[in-house]
Image (cartoon, rainbow, N blue to C red; front, top):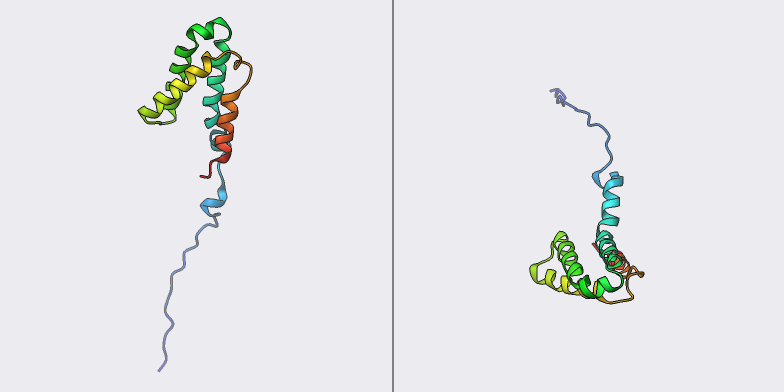
Amino acid sequence: MTEEPEKVQVTRVPNQPPQERRGLSLLQRMYNALFPVIGGLVLDLTDLATFGPVGIYAGFFVGAIVGWLISSIYGSSPRTRLIWAILAGVYCMVPGTAFFPIATVISAILRFNKTS
C-alpha cells in the first residue's frame, strides 16, 4: 500500500513589519508633543496681552474666557472648566506674571510626567 502525499496550496504573504514597529508619523509625534503645551502657551500670551492696568481691570474676565475655552478643548467636565476658568482669570489678573511663561512650563511638566 502506497500513500499519496497530500497536496497543499501555499500563498505568499508580503513581508511587512509589525504595526508597532512602524512608528508614528512626524505630524502625529508633533501633535502628541505640542498639543498639551499649546493651551499653556495661549494662556501665557493672553496674560502678556493683559499686561499693566488692562490686566487689573479686564484680566480676570479675558483670562477666564480663555481658560474656559482651553479646558473645553481638552475635554474637561463643566465643573473642572469652571475651576480652570477661575484660575486662568486670576493668573491673567495678577500683576508681574506677564513675562514669565508659568502656564507653559506647568503644562510641559504635566505632559512630561504623564505615564500614558
